[in-house]
Image (cartoon, rainbow, N blue to C red; front, side, top):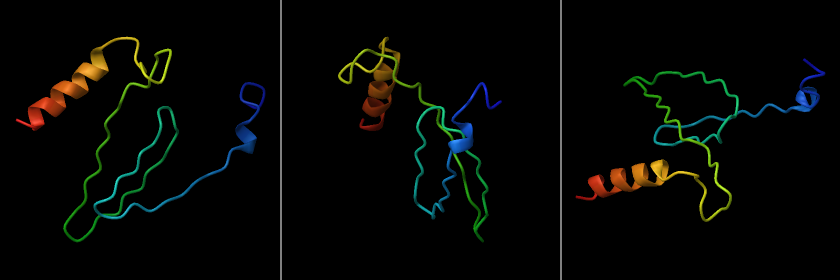
Length: 80
C-alpha cells in the first residue's frame, strides 16, 4: 500500500459537526465517513453525486452539455 500510495501516511484527518439546517460539501473523490445522530424529531442525510469537471478551462468545465443542461432544466422548472 505504501508503495502504491506513498503520501497516504502523511494524510491528515479532518472532523466536523454539521448542525441542523447546515450542509457539508465534499469535493469529488474525497473519502469520508459519516456518523449520524438522530434528533428527537429525526434527521435526514442526502447525497447528490455531481460529475466532476472534465473540461479544459474554468469557463467550460464540462466536455459535454449534459450537466449544464441538467442544471438549467432543474433551475428553470423550479422558477416556474
